[in-house]
Length: 247
Image (spheres, rainbow, N blue to C red):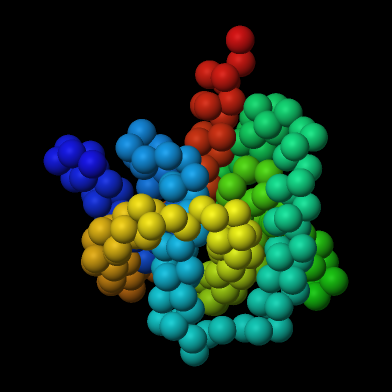
């Protein structure tokens, strides 16, 4: 990796850590935009999974006093079931049409939610949460966005920013565990990938710490809007490649 690519790689690691520290998710969305031009897709996916365990683990540790295990376990259970099923279905579904459809739904949801006040808080039981978690995992297996549905569902409940993160970050951690185990079984964590992991780790940690510091300075409404903007960006990240891929 030459000098320019090295700078881009570590900058992406810092930016991904910062966004994850600030919002609790979207690290993969940030880093993939640069890394896919520098390293292979398999290395990118492996690094996102490996770093994801770290970023989500850090968030869980920082918010451990707010953890709500009654809300965490059904979403996590559904997610771990849905991810492998989504990955299997991906072999039977046109990925371009799928990403376009999911992207459009995310963009419409984000725009609608940004244009109106927050939703009236909803009460959701364990059984529906398992279903939401399953859809979350399914979308993750199909698109790579393993936490977007659970993050949206946390907004519906009218929780504070800490309460939301204390639920969707453990769910994301569970998703990254499943993904990491699957990738390890396929041999994705090569020696070269582990070297890249070590190279970007200090920059990711600095970004993670900085993002969490800034997170402590915003209120619940600002957090809601930041999450919606990231969901909008996630939708666009699916739409643009899908449109460009069409003949």
